[in-house]
Image (cartoon, rainbow, N blue to C red):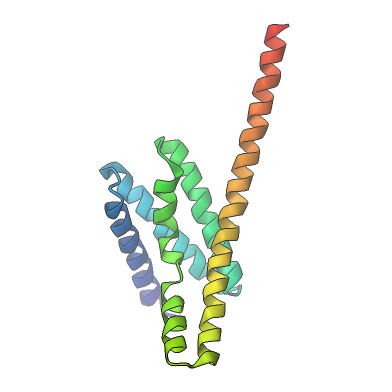
Length: 157
């Protein structure tokens, strides 16, 4: 893959993310940061795909998208979902799903299975990447609440 192809893919990932921010009616000041998440997560995917298979590349990229969204939501004081959807959109396996269905309609079961397998890998990797980051943030929040409760008990005595 050439540098110009990579740049084009990153620009298109950004543009696709912008489209979804507009569709979800994000405030103007949130459009660029939210869309940047899509561009960055696609860049992470491309970089990771040089060294890893589809599953791990997508897992790393979706984990980054979730982390980026969590941090940006705290900085901008907005819901995580607004940033996460825009950041993960470029990772959605639309083309592999299309080819899976197309080959299934043509009754080319070998190709349908091949593309179906890739689609499932993408989807599962996205789910695992999201789950890991959100679980870590949830545990962090519970630990902080536990510390706050201990502090309250000390204040009462």
